[in-house]
Image (cartoon, rainbow, N blue to C red):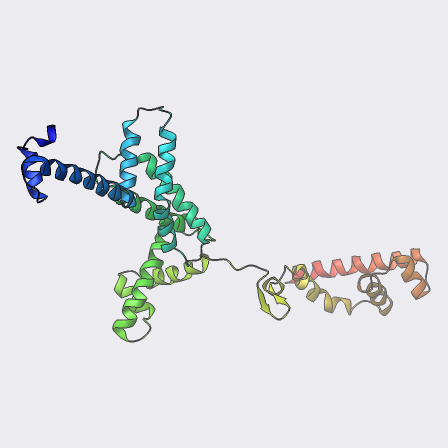
Length: 300
């Protein structure tokens, strides 16, 4: 039988490496056992292969298929599914920075899909080395462009980040909280730029008007509204000495009309005059005040 023939060449060396005699039936059994052992080891290595190797194998199969092949969609989905944990881990690195984790995961996964579509296994390093910087950059871009409640220039955002690092470094070096002058000297910028970078931090997160301030009080309750009465303060103060020059009855009628907001009929009943007489008194008093205001303005 064929396995009874003494091996030569590579088969002989393989048999000797396995500790089997190089001749006869023993060699054949050793080679057969070795082949089974190699098959088992290969199968185990494939099942325990790291995710990176599995992704690389999927990419090789994906790019070996021509465009429009029916298996490409399934292979692409398999690559994305295998790499999702990597994208999620990168999203978790950026958690606790004021953005919802669900939003960060969505940004990372969308970036992963673009990386899968743009990756060429025939160029450069493995997929992880290509995708990690791309996904991290997309997350940083999300914080820069989307996370700010009020959009500030990119230069101020970068200044704010530099200030955060400088405060920590100078705080350890000086043993105290660095001043504006300390930060400006360390970063090589003006004190005004330092203050602008510090002020822009308040634009990152907006506070809701429904935020509680005290028991039963919300922030919106403390905000003032436009006071239209301020527009007539000057006119009112100018009229005050002029009103004293009117007769007592005229002052009373003006107070009832504009102070108590009574109609002319109601004023007539109050002062025991006809409505027409009240109308003439009101018109005369107003004309007189208007004339005095113009005269006082000309004198000024």
